Length: 264
Image (cartoon, rainbow, N blue to C red; front, side, top):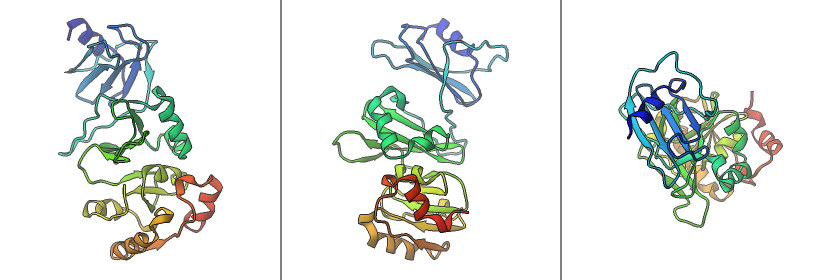
């Protein structure tokens, strides 16, 4: 790491706990240089294969730091201030960097939630996966990646938090299997993806935050859905919605009609 690059990064104007993307000051490649502010340090990395510009430093941000005209702001990443810390891999980039990733997010009806800032979605160029960041409040505690190719497993957990993926606000939580379905329902209710069909002890602290739960697993998991309802009724009032179509595959009108009675 050269001293000039460290000074350059320290002089950039970045919001606390924000992230910026720009042309690399070292190799000059367009939109390959990422800088993240974690509150106590800054991390930078160039994604071009032939560039070695990367590093981190702790520092106090200069209040008079100029705004660079080439900087492109993307979704902020908030790291947890608790014992459990998930550090985003350097291979996570914006989904706009890969047309197939962006197309997939649109196809499974998660793009509206992404544009609205209800979910942070990245592309992992090493594993060729669309990655949904798993949050606990404002903190990133884990990530789940969905393969874009015929690679098993279809879903990959990057951390070991055991936390479910949630998207949206409200007192009613809709329990679903996958992150895309959770995003697609978040216009109306809070989506909770178990990343499977089994209830784990680590899910319960999150599920108890809701006043009511609705189990709506994919149409091929109806028996598991009945089992989940029986398990959850000991913790919160829980209802079952039997689906004829997976939530992520519904139109917006179909989702609204299916869950109408639970929408305020």
